[in-house]
Image 1 (cartoon, chains in turn green, orange, brown, cyan):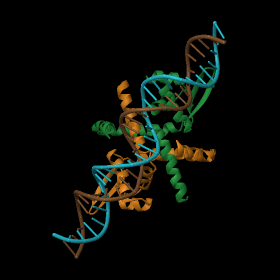
Image 2 (cartoon, chains in turn cyan, green, blue, orange; image 1 turned 180 degrees about the vertical axis):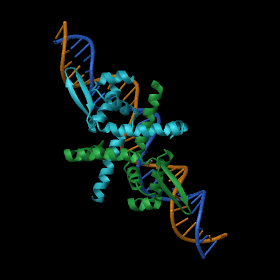
Image 3 (cartoon, chains in turn blue, orange, cyan, red; image 1 turned 135 degrees about the vertical axis):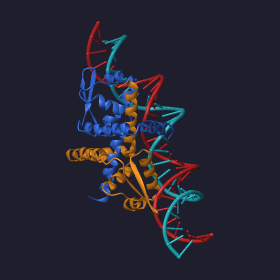
Image 4 (cartoon, chains in turn yellow, brown, blue, purple; image 1 turned 120 degrees about the horizontal axis):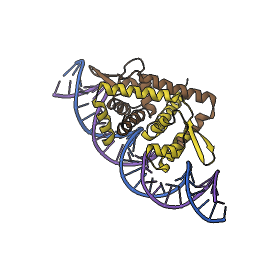
Length: 116
Length: 116
DNA sequence: TACATAGTTGCGAAACAGCGCAACTGTATA
DNA sequence: TATACAGTTGCGCTGTTTCGCAACTATGTA
């Protein structure tokens, strides 16, 4: 594999990760684990404005992580790559291990997230 | 699990993903797959300035993804959670499937990455 | 047609990330 | 001490992300 295409793969990989680097988008992915849902469903479960949820969904959809299906007034969204849940669960697993091992991790990450 | 701590888990999860959402940091992680390496090693392999590599490493280290070991003049870095490579590989696997299925995906992602 | 509901899009402000450059610290050797 | 090498840190600039708000489109019903 050439140096150039390696670069591009890293770039794509980073793009996918950057889609996953927002708590609301992660929650949406998690909520779509089993069933497809509408923007309204998600907005209600998440306690957010529909416009906000729609914006996050647009990002997920444009990057190809969600698929849409219209049915009358509603648009149902579902995961394009259910396999991605494995990566999601793996990361969360590591997170939980870390939390149980070092209780202060949580605070540390949270504080760094606040200031920096 | 309370609503509040769910929020915080999503937040942490997003923080980890945001550390992974940079091609240079992903390349560093990939280069540290087997052996620990110094900033100089990485800078040379990646063709970047040491200062730049050091900045990326600082982010990885502060977020707890890397561990350091000093030996004389050199500081050797290694992965704190080798298990994270599984998540890394899983995502890349999905990426490669997507690429082979739809050749235009690459261009699409790349172009969106450029303009938007 | 008019109206309601579901969802999308654009705007603007604030916060944040990336990076080059220069200055700095820390360790080893002479 | 001085010098060299390895790595870190701070600054300033630029581009991007997030989010509330308002305006908009699209579908269904009366």
